[in-house]
Image (cartoon, rainbow, N blue to C red; front, side, top):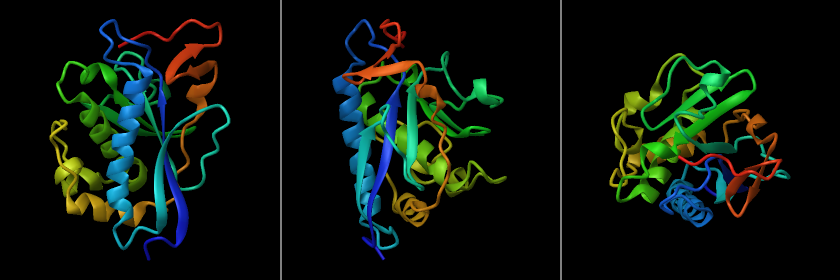
Length: 207
């Protein structure tokens, strides 16, 4: 069945401004998106994935998500979206929450910038939250952590955590599942070279 649909997209939106040490910039965000895309390309090659190709794009004002696509926010624990939209608590590296406005998936930049392989760690965390987004965040049971291998682990995810065959099978089987995404965070913000600015042109706070 692989390849019967043309293109599946995962989108990311960075809500975190530059840090003082140059670890978080527009080019860093682009590198993370490339690594996230490569993870999903492995999923796309599985026979149960219905898509011919996958791409990762930075979310923008004219973006239109198709049914089945996913949006991941890069934010911080202090500026998280989920608790402002009803979540009772935060996950260690990211959180996915079914809000009234749609599914919110976010990862926390301030939690990994001090780590050596934080680019791959960020991509791995984004993949983990995308699994929750597509598979179980709107269900009463935690299916992802119950599987538990590779990037489905409920423990710490690092840059060295590997995508498992079971992760690929689970995600491939759910790629086309339509889950409405939360897109309201874009209001009042513009993205310039991967970095967020408020409409008054002041840069968003860093991690």
